[in-house]
Length: 126
Image (cartoon, rainbow, N blue to C red):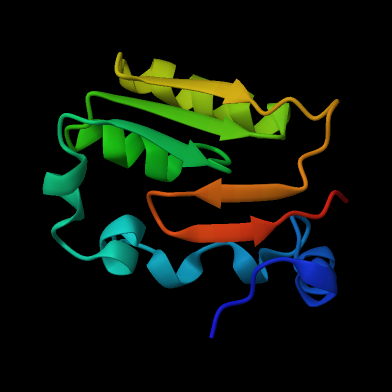
């Protein structure tokens, strides 16, 4: 069962948002989150490709994808504060195949469609 958008997702995200550590990814500590979610073959699928990481946050997964052979990774997020952290991490690592950009929020999006993952998700602005 998946949970994408709507009032229930809005309530969950508000309760377990940035200020709550319940969704901080502790279950992936010392593990490759992307590999766990998408399988060990994900690295060969992403190698040499341009990859977009939607909602990249502080860039952890985007950086791992860049380090594991992607031609270029573009991390995007609505929070410029976390993008600054991601950019500093990349600078500290000296990576050249990764960049970050904010998602323009002056025109709210109402849906996200991805043909790569067969996903359609109604978005809520909060």
